[in-house]
Length: 307
Image 1 (cartoon, rainbow, N blue to C red):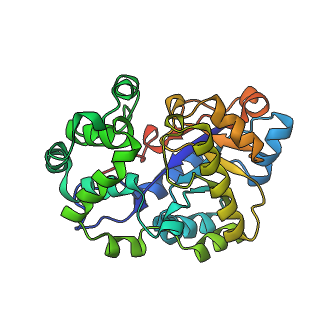
Image 2 (cartoon, rainbow, N blue to C red; image 1 turned 90 degrees about the horizontal axis):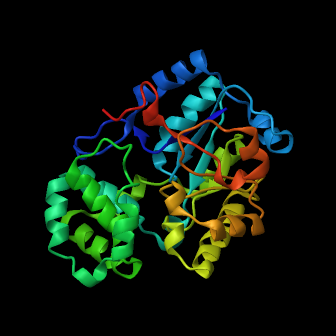
């Protein structure tokens, strides 16, 4: 049994010439590939597997970050094919009425490219903004499966991992004010609360992706608790009550969470959580450690690469 991770699934836009996304046509072709080569695990069988430990043949589709893409493009395609998916939604944009820093970075890079944003960023950084132990820890195990140029990778590493969180927001907001109009961009960037409810009511599983999309391992225990509890609380309200509690770690990889993260999820009634690890789900994952399930990136399979 394999789980597949998706993020942006959309049509090309002239306004975002450097943006990394999976083209809708390629998404359809990848689903055709999976149907032929693997098959799809039913929703009921997947949920049952956590009780029995049985790993069914097929794939499970997961979609991160709560993009409008998922309602506009993905949901109709799944509906047409009789498929289901797990949609992991960060709740901060609904509470704060703003784009998350991780997505601001995507939009900056997608509009202007890595070199221009890197040059602008280096003019705003001071040495005390960077956490040097994080530079050592996160340099070799981040973005190694992404087809990005060196400048783009460096911008992402600096702003998502190296910089202290107290500095991240102000620096990213300063870049946004210099380059983009966030008030216009946010209008159609994320799903709405009504769309979350509709997806849930149509049989999709809606899960937590925290509030603010932080690297959980960089947070204190209390900060982690708030990210988990607050996000589940919001999603319970938006859906009328989640049928199941599930979670996926922002960024993913074992560097992105810790033992305390998993304990907090269990305390909050989370049945399963996805990591990013390129291997199939085994019975031991389901029965012994369901809070760190492995998950492939879609770009590891045919038709899953950004164009």
